[in-house]
Image (cartoon, rainbow, N blue to C red; front, side, top):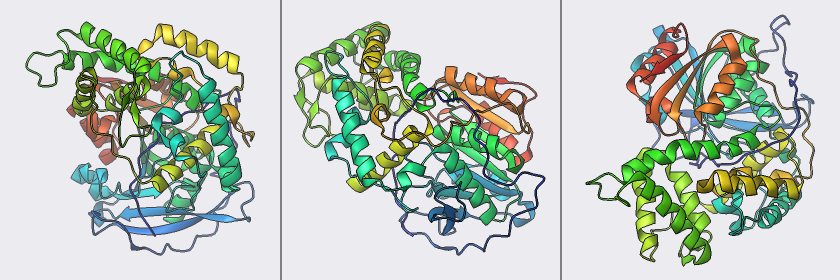
Length: 496
């Protein structure tokens, strides 16, 4: 089984389907299903992995409403609990995306977990349906349409969405033509159902999880569909679960996320003594960025090795968006600004192999378009983009633009899952106050939806991914204690 590193795509989706998906699994009162065959653990392919990590595959129905029909494979990886006498169960590492996997995570971020957590849990990663080395899907897109300025709906220099809609049509047609039957069955609800098959194959009655970014939505949906199968659930960097919008709402949230985070970059980039200082005050950093992006809209610079091979205003805006995820990446954005001012360009960003991008894009497209319907009206998108360009100039209308789902030829097979307060009180949310991709405002909506099932830790920190990444010691301590002991704060907590 091949194990490859993939970048999680920054994709999004929408519509107007409200409801609760019916779990296609036995209820807690029904007799247990037949014990699945033991997994055949083998060496994992790939370099830099912990020698303890082993890999296997789990067969799941391609269509969960037809459990005896065609099956597909889900690739899983595992490092066993380090202290068998203290073992509690399995901690599932749910990746972001859609279009990411966590196969390397038991050897990677899993090893950052405190010793008591590693003693207590097998660490398990997986590749969601459609992601190689699980049974894979590919839309065979034009390579030009794999660029982030195409996959996200950055509008034309005049604000027009006509180019976005043309990209959406090309992408939708390619996925319908080349994605096969599997692309119709890629969705968050089906990923959650697959995870319950993984749980059963691992021989676990209940499972714990650490979901990050899009993985928080997967974890919330799993907890809704299979509440009696959950043990300790950590949701880190959280999405608004609104079932009428889903990823379309997450895309729109970039407006808020950038406005929450750009001031932090601006303070850093105007600090005396900073070797990458771009202006004397935070206000000048902002006005200078907007002026530079407008100039590059009019006069783009050649950018050899990049996709597309030019540094225009949208490429600069996408560079901003990418590098606001982690304050450690602020110098990359500052160097791009300083170079472009001089009429030069920074080194082109590194890109994964095209096969990896194609696979991640197909899984992302399938997920966001099958989760919920998107509007098709070009005029409505144009009105939204025009308004957004005025109220949120840093993102230039992109968060309200049409993605591929505006031209998707298929209707979702079921309503999006409505996350509710029905279920055990065993969920801990951890959320940075300033997160460009999953803003605090969206996390608060998930907190409200979960009600008494959850407690939320808000961390006074900047960046995406809070626990053991861009958070702080108070937040990390609180999450680690919950995983190791089950103890949560008695009420929502602010970690200053």
